[in-house]
Length: 74
Image (tube, rainbow, N blue to C red):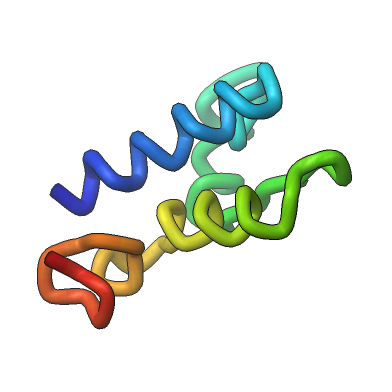
């Protein structure tokens, strides 16, 4: 379920911005961005949108919004 929440965060970012949260020309560029959670949020996104996407893309699955066993989980 934690993986589904992370993927949903990526989809939500794509819906709201038209871009993927982690972009690059090849996997060697993209993977380090994912591991560092290197995301450039556009200025036009609301504070609430940034907060929910950021909480869904937490690196540690136990910290993700809604993950089973997390503080705010199901």
